[in-house]
Amino acid sequence: MFTKILIANRGEIAMRIMRACQELGVKTVAVYSDADQNALHVQFADEAVHLGASAPKESYLNRDKLIQAALHSGAEAIHPGYGFLSENAAFAAAVESAKLKFIGPSADSIRAMGDKAESKILMKKAGVPTVPGFEGLETEAEFKQAAQEIGYPVLIKASAGGGGKGMRVVSQESELQDALELARGEALNSFGDERLLIEKYIAAAHHVEFQVFGDEQGNLIHLFERECSVQRRHQKIIEETPSPVLTSELREQMGAAAVQAAKAVNYFNAGTIEFIFDPSSAQYYFLEMNTRLQVEHPVTELVAGIDLAQWQIRVAAGEKFPFQQKDFMQRGHAIECRVYAEDPASGFLPSTGKLLQFIEPHGPGVRVDSGFAKGKTVTHFYDPLLAKLIVHAENRETAIQKMQNALKNFIVHGVVTNVDFMQAVLAHPDFASGQVTTRWVETVLAVADLAVEKNKPTPEQLISAALAEATLANSSIAAVERRNESDPYSPWRQTNGFRN
Image (cartoon, rainbow, N blue to C red):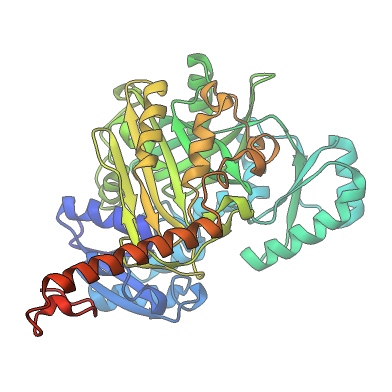
């Protein structure tokens, strides 16, 4: 086992990995930027190394600084978390070249699955169903021809992309040119690669992914599925397992296909095979592979009964994964809500500021993976994810009720959050019946129906409340002063906030 690990990330995922390391008796090294010098993960680690300026390219995306930090601190391995450099094949290779262990898959596996176009070709060869589409196109004329052959609507995607970046839905030919220009620009800005692919867009689709896990000795299994169809801007917000739309037969078929896909690239450590599922035809198609630990891994941990973060570290240290497929079953139901500092009523724009209050819910079957605390600051430099709220119960109905109650008790002041929005989703009949598709938020749950604004006080109400509070405070001070008129030196006569 390693004695010291550097976590090349920040926020809740850095905290999650550090807790796993603590339980394994492994010391941790945090890294931080200027904006994160007082962050929770910096305080939690055994030691911390300053990387540079707040911009990601000067800190968390600077692979040379990360490797030097690991070497100078005496760390033997680097855990990339998710995002940033977690799926960067060049970084994984550079870590290994520096005689450090990269806690994740091989650089070759990352490279093979990191390119959406190349991975689709690989999956076709491996016999895994893929969405009808074309890769390697360059000119607008080629895209027009491909779109006509596939049939509208189509989806334009960045070949090297992820997280909804460089992605555009095109309903008709007149929209194609603008979509290509926008997608190319976004892909180049986000990934440094403007290549695009085109595929059939399945409108009423479910996003169902399978967790896979394997060791470096060739043992690889799946740990069941996660339903991830509640999305905004092609990014997940709420995930759950088991999926309410899969039968046991489909679960077995898709799980086998996921293992087959991972084995095609000699995969080891934690990874996720993502599928698009069409409930009207009961057909599923390979979407992409995430060659890292997923944001939503806690729901799998609770239902499958395994600590994925710990096992990532253990297999990277050379341990054999001792389990087989038959050793796992789904126990109960788990739901995860991503609590973001963002305003759903303003197009989910990020919200920044100091957290004046941050109270996490507690109770049986309630888990919070958080990277923030009261007094910490949410900046514009990074993803505005505050925490992941996860619940586990004996069935889906009970899990939904438990999550609604937990959200009510998640108190955040200082920034706007999406908590009310997620309450609206959970309370909707479509969610209760498992009918939410990937475009449901934008097409069904319109902003006007969110009930987010309805509960917000008006400016007039806020002013009235502030005046009332001030009046009460002044009355209390006056009463205290009257009680202490005989003592001119009483500290209770002061109105400067004196505390004993």
